[in-house]
Length: 249
Image (cartoon, rainbow, N blue to C red; front, side, top):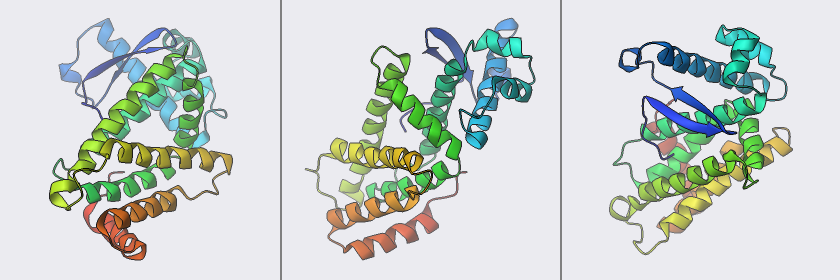
């Protein structure tokens, strides 16, 4: 959720340095072989993200990714020696695209509007089921302190909690929410609900309804913070979601 979009981003992935470039502003990129390498790695990561999203991580082959990216198998292995390298690169790609989506939410949006946006974000997640599986896989990898995924996800959570807390804190002035509330703790709770539901979705083979789970949590929070009934808060979340949160698919 918390990110400033840069033309180029350099990450360490299993001790292999990759550069991810976004937004297609080719004119601003360096020329020559370095630029070609950046663009090729970007194309590979985007192809892998599409395959993982549609087919899932385990069902996707490196050969299919190479074909989608328009390069040879050996060309793919030059940039990403193993599928595990690609897994973490695509996970970072997912975090970055999610950050860009959240950046489109107006900075002046109220705290309660941010809860509405959490529901909309959940809907985007279920539209990419393969990336939910990928998130759970990388989360497991990140549990190992020696893995580069550990650092990536630790930074992700710190930044996400800070950014979401800042957005929720807007509710003090715009929604009349109490200034004494522990907004970082509230933000961490919201993120935990979303991430936990993704894990349960995978374990239940898709039976768990992520959107309704996030919607219900948002309604209960709204009720607790404003004194409205949970039913009234749930209705408010649905109306605000439909009327004020644009479709950013």
